[in-house]
Image (tube, rainbow, N blue to C red):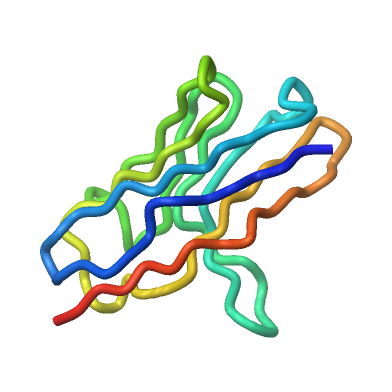
Length: 116
């Protein structure tokens, strides 16, 4: 089992920055991919950013050039640096972890609100 806990969300003005954190605990060694997603009701999760084995990163089209995903393996924590925030970035951001057996783990989400 893996537990994921997000933090760092909040209210920020357009053009501002936030840094989200996702702290992982449990069977960390089984995780081969971590990421940040939106989870619209009734729809498939939407990729914001993810980091894969070998620190390969991928981003959703709307955040390329503005958001940066990274992780600190010593702290078992993944980060999402969010710069040049826009009102349309307002959402609940969920931390995701996938393991080698194909199990998916999700955090409870952290709210990001960008005011215009």
